[in-house]
Image (cartoon, rainbow, N blue to C red; front, side):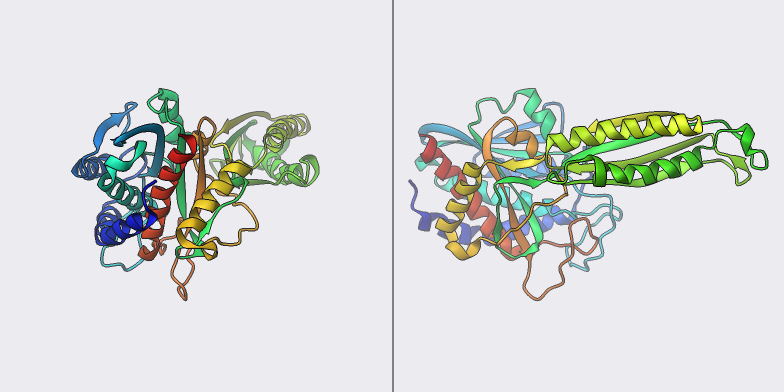
Length: 397
């Protein structure tokens, strides 16, 4: 086992480079599926560390780096997502986004710099690594409900990996704190699209039409009782409709209404119940109002789950690196989603949150135009990712 003080020293030496890489990435955000320059930057940096690189993996912008240690052993993957969000940054940082309408508002700049920092550190102890490390630079995490993880896993390029580790910077936690839970940490995310078709008529003669706006209003009200009365209350669920469009003119009964929303759950039982009862509710609306409805319920990311063993392993390695105080007290998972679940559905591994808000500073949530990662958390993420890879190799050897 490589001495942990050697790792600490190498991480400390790498901090200026880690922050510089993060700032370059932050200045040059690219949206989901468009991460061309970002991927090229990641590939170039990995190569500069002496790591073998594959680009355009699985027909996408994904990049894989492979570092074979000096000793045989397990294959451990570390993952970072690369895409930004379609938002205009308002942080006021000197290295703010160069592109209006594009911003790293979800901390993926932090994830990438942590991955590159881990790659740099591990490359410096390559001869003593008892196994192989794969660095996953993943596109399109924000492209729900499909995402980038699913395609990479399905392509088979990761077959042979023994475990995968990932993280998400977490503004609700103090900078450098680690949050990890057994069971669900983040929710499954499904996309819902509903179309109600009716019959147009003059507003003065509504009896000659089929009013989809009235029908939609009744549906939206009725749908809220699915969570409160039809889903087991022991299985948390959120059902939100965020878009509704319909009608062509103020004095015409609308013949079509479209509704879009999302369902968030931790358990398949709740997911199944919501989908089934949405369909039942629409059948009732059709019977009452004469509409003809269609439900498109697209299952997206599964819930991110750590087994008790996976959570204990991450927590144990974190405590070994930084002491017991590094672990934040986490009482509950989040209803936001992450496609890292795609890896944990197939591979061993684990997922954790990394606190990213400096003490005394305003806590801006993810997907906020003012959100920025506190760079003090980055070396913590690097050291933990490196240590997880090495510890898992030793465990599986």
